[in-house]
Image 1 (cartoon, one colour):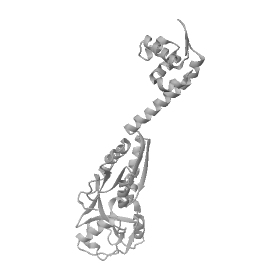
Image 2 (cartoon, helix red, strand yellow):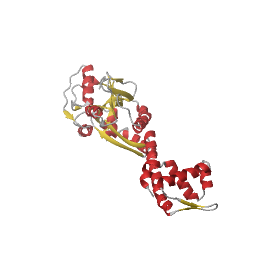
Image 3 (cartoon, rainbow, N blue to C red):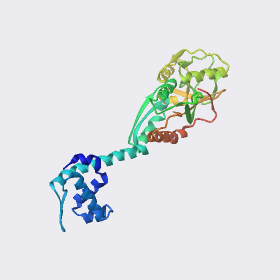
Image 4 (cartoon, rainbow, N blue to C red):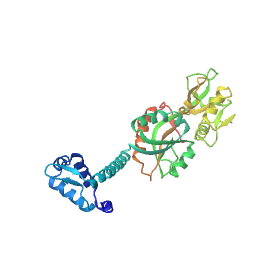
Length: 315
């Protein structure tokens, strides 16, 4: 059997016909199941035998049987057809978003709050899509996106940039965060100006939260020097629980504190919020699986809108 000719000249369709005859031991039954005429089927098998320089079937008016060469070819053809079908199934699933790899960058507060439930639903819908999550601060998200190390980011609305597109998910209102039971423990909104003279625990100057609180203090026409500056929300929460001060944080960060000892109330005059959304590169075409995750985020995230009283501000 000359398998060198098989590499270049034998079609998968012909191998499928061969396997059908081998399975049914009948040219007439194989032609019916494959929806080809019996003369066309016989011609295909004859051409296959000529290409391989070997007889594949012994046949008479009643019986069809595989020759020793046919028995040798059968598992080879089955493996080739199986590999081909599996490869194109994988391609089809990748095109439809059923398979693939997605890398996303996420603000820590969103990674701890919104994202876990979204990923749980997405995994149930598309179990063969692998998702890699990098939780980091806003400036680092922009760098990861520009370097194409992530497919998209979930963060604050970026400064105007012709290279980036932003799809809003929800407004994230800033609230006063304090130890439960202290003098500020009330559900009523509090003006930012009322924070003057209090021990304020701030985020580090490089964070988007700090930049927004600085804007709020400027609008309230007060100057406030932080007692502590922290890089992590959990540290802010620990200092508040210890009674060392208060802070102003986006409502989405409260799950990161996760303590019944800490409470919050709205801040007004001005009412400040940051817009959380999906950031992508305009020049990058997202994979179907990445787009499917964005669709899931938009379906789940749009329902997390904060109170309408907060006016969006640059972050």
